[in-house]
Every structure is written in structure tokens, then in C-alpha cells.
Image 1 (cartoon, helix red, strand yellow):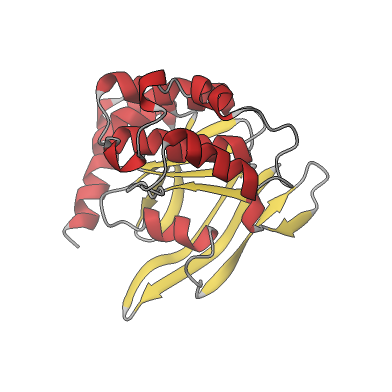
Image 2: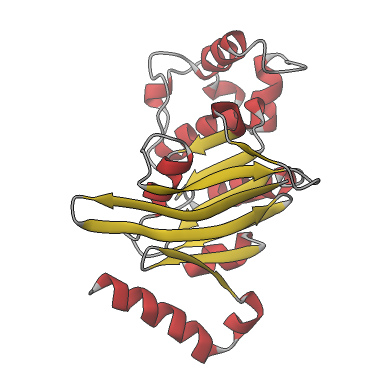
Length: 236
């Protein structure tokens, strides 16, 4: 399975954010979408999730036989940089509610505590209202419901930036365990994070998508050129 993006365009007034972005993402890999703040990473995700209408281009899923079909809402999981959870529910109530409203989509549903165990949510936190959770804990809950729904494409918008070292490491391990059979795209402006977690790195620069040759990042001159390109865009 592949996610094929072809000539995607999006502008806001006279500002072109995506200028014909094209790339093919393959299953079984975690991709780091690298770009400065404001480069258009969230805009790209919002277009794929159809929260924004594109100005041109297309995106589709391609199966192993080369047949393409449009993405549907069931194909995409989207973890926002600022987590959105129902703060009036407890962690356990939230998972139960999610299972109830998605009963037809989840083949073999389990008890809420099984999922909370998987996400390493402490017993003492499961009865707390989500409004009392930290940013990182809310992010884990947001990620958990996407794991339960198990869409083939998972979009992660700066999910680890504000987490402490321990929680960030837990989430990296969860993403590595889940990557087989899925397409995972993680946006970040931190190159070190992309190098640590991701199998491949894609740069969003000047409204276009381009692969970064990972092996060449050991070459400081090549790495400096990538950083310089991002700085140049920032001041353009």
C-alpha cells in the first residue's frame, strides 16, 4: 500500500503554501516530515484529512496491484499538535465511549483497561477527568484512540515536541511497534528527532516535498545545506 500525493496546491489569499507538492509514502515505514515552523506541514495534513479544500492536485491510496482509490475518513488517523479530548470524561470513560461509537469499525474490541495498559496509563489516572491530564497525557490518549481505530495512514503533527524525555521515549517505542502495515508521517522541525525515530525523511521546502538522503546527513556539509535551505525559507 502507498499514499500517493500528486501536484498538491494550496494558497491562502496570495500566499502559496503548497506549490505542487508530490511524494509517495509506503507502508511499513515512519516518515519524518521536516520543515521550519510555518512551512506548511499542518496545511498538508489538513488537506489530506480534508479539513481544507485543496486548490489543485490529488492524493490517493494505491494497493499492491497498482490500483488507486480516494482516501476516506476511515483511512486516516490524525493526532493534532494541540490534543483535543473530551475533558469532561475520565480516561476510562473516554475509551468506552470511543469503542461504543465505533462499534462497527473495530473488529475485536477489548475492555478499556486493556487499551490503557497498552498505552501505559497508570491505574491511578484512569478515573481522573481528562481536563486534569497533562499535555503529554492528553496526547497519549489522542494517540491511543487512533491506535484502536487502526487506520492505514497516521498523521502526527509535532506530537513529541512538548513531552518530557520519558514520555517521548514511550511514544517513540509505541510508534515503532505499530509501523508494520501502516503509513506513518510525523511532522517536526527538529532534525534530531526525525533522525532518531524515522525510517525516511522528507523535507517540505518552498511548498514542495523532497526526500532527504539520510546516509548523507552524516556529512556535515550536506546537513548544513539542508539547515541553510530552511533558514533561507524562513527569511524569504
